[in-house]
Amino acid sequence: MRATASSLLIAVFLCLSAAIPAAAQQQEPWIWKDRDGKVRSRADLDEILKQRKLWLESVGKSGAQADLRGADLSGAFLDQANLSGADLRGANLSGADLSGANLIGADLRGADLSGANLSDANLSDANLSGASLYEADLSGARLYGADLARAVFQPNNLPTLEWIAQARGLELMTYYDNPGPLTQLRKQFQDEGYREQERAITCALNRHGATASELRASVEEKWKSFRGRDFIPKYIMPFRSFVEGTFKWVAFDLTCEYGLSYGRPLRIVGLLWLLFSGVYAEFVSRSAKSGIYFVGTRWSRGITNIQGIQIRPRTLPAAKWWKLPFLWLRREWRVLRAAMFFSLMSAFNIGFRDINFGRWLRLLTKREYDLKAVGWARTVSGFQSLLSVYLIALWVLSYFGRPFG
Picture 1 (cartoon, rainbow, N blue to C red):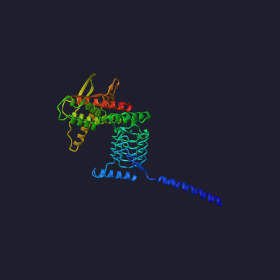
Picture 2: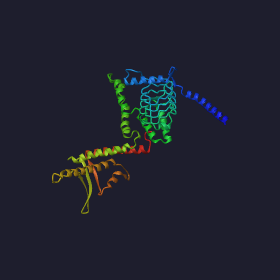
Picture 3: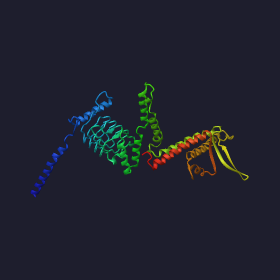
Picture 4: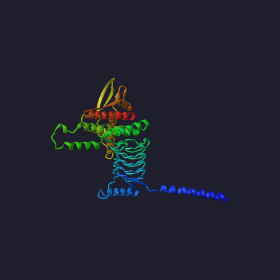
């Protein structure tokens, strides 16, 4: 019995002896190396970040900008760190924990972010492109919930698809001169069935150089380039690219974001319906020949007559003063109702052989009649029809196909 107890005590002692060096090894301080290969401590990194914070708070009057170019920060714990605008070109951040970090505008050209945890990090306006001496490596990087709005996405190695699929701001990413990484990423999303993410990358690719801010900046830059010089054709602003970019922005970005917001065209059609309803109501209220006419068929003594009567507000009947507001509201409602129905007919004035949506709408009424526009009302109706046909076609193509790539 005593031998057994002694053996048990010896075994416990040996286990504790083996665990103590292991614990001591785990408690060794974390170190890193700067670009000159000098070994630095965690306290040095904390001091750099502290000076960075002072530099931001004082608007550059005190402290110092964080210069971590070429630093070896592999495996660093930088969660929630404020590294906005930091110079991290060529830095080794492989396996680093940057979850929730502020990396707004950070220069990460050629940085090694392989296996890094960038969950919920703010990478908006960051530069994630390759450098002349280093490759931007995002292989295995976790970007769940990361904000990539306006980030320059031009890495040499793409991140894990499942993680970047959960990132935000994919439709706002951009590139310098090589759309290859974004095109490759879109292809991967398409192959794996990430339809919404595929739409977002398509939007990012088509938006390159054609956003409102970029068009405005292009105009200002070109204007400065030839302002004050002689008016020579070679100094004329390249209006072709500007007009093309403006057309793409108005026709495709504002309407459906290059297929990303495929339901937006229908919402615009609905807004246009209400807007033009007010315009047609104004035409009905005005005393002019231009307006909306009620065209119906009348049978009299076996003879069919087609009559066209201009829709006009009725004269209010003589009534007590307290009834007049109700009578006026009822009259205006009738005018607005006719204008809304005519606007709906104009919006869906789409027909192909036996398919005629306008005629189908008229079948919903109790009587057989038609509404015709005359004068300027006809011009407005034609304009609405063209806009609605374009928007409906854009919705169909964006929802069922890939018209933008």
